Image (cartoon, rainbow, N blue to C red; front, side):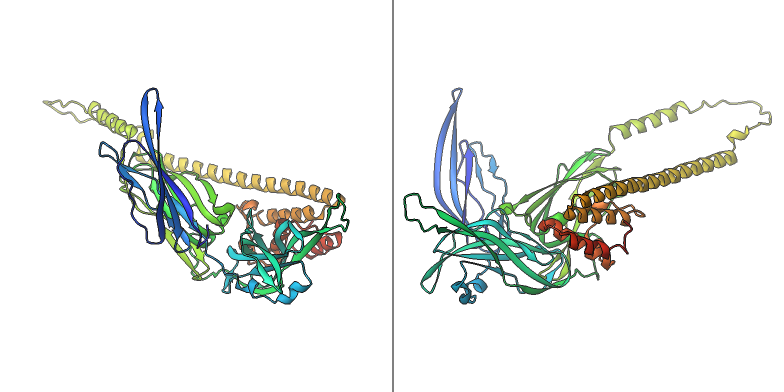
Length: 526
């Protein structure tokens, strides 16, 4: 929801309860406006439920926590509700569009404006922008396609819905209808950039026939915002933490564990929730700062967006960890790093340190017991001799320390040679796979060029380029981003260009395709 709006919540409690209570939060106004009760009888057993309705109004933007509602049942037991989060967007004033030059309305039936924050903007951040369209009330308007990028190396997300409950405005006694999109703009490239947004709409005009069967004619209209120049700043390389994975925005973090007691080798579920606003696609699982005593398993993640947005919500991670020894007394914190565009700096946040009690486990206890029993069995009885006779004992060479050291060293050498061989074979297998994939991509490229599908052909060239980059490394081509290529301007510019074409679904002509292809022949043999 947006700052200045209100929403309602309903809390339902079942059974014989006392009055419902909660702690008044600082940044949220809560007002009770209704209460109801119902009785349900199942198999002769009566159950009574109470529902309480509240109006919730946020006072500040951001991720706010609703209070925990609690009460007591007839046995004196405390009953609590779960704690919910409220995502509040900052209200963007529409000054620039309202105070625009109204002379453009004299000859236009539709006009489009975009409000961009007046601050330093960074590559990769999700910039909140307000897009406003004005439609003349003389005709019945309609929208064919929501605003999309016309010019500039950006990705724009207008969300699933637009807002049409804004008040109409009057210019020279003519009424204009306002439609707004609370959108997010993501820059793909640093430097001075031109930006222009376009929208496809229509108006319905009468055909001029005043008869009974007269109908309106649809007139398509394509409208653009004013071309703007904005400066996009690259993320600073200085003081960039190793834990930074590309997340840009403002975030907060919560964590919990499935238990505070466990055994060596048993799995423990560690849950992490990251809330906020930003490019959640680059929000990865935080790193644990102690992996010597813990075995880390692959994590799972889900994202829940606010108002169908990919840039505002919460990302949930579940990480399975397992203790390696019983000397552990706490689960160490996980560290997450993001870049805050408002502050212009990298921010480290960490989870709590959870105390935990680790037992040796059943297997380890049995092992110690076996070792103890073996010690008792191997203990030889003591005999007293009246006379000792010196004797010469011949020790086999296989029982000498030198032989055992040589045997152990030979075994280590054999293991090391085997590991090196496997790694070389794996690397060679990876290269063969990349070469095979490159051959398949070249065949696909020829096929796309023959069918004159130059857009997909250009994207195929990008995939060949990524395979070529990853040929001598252990990186996966699908994990390469524009940030990884920033030190190579030729690769970087081509990557950004193809990503822009892919997201904007631009149709490439043959002449444009040939020009781009010739420009990269020096970087890639095709």
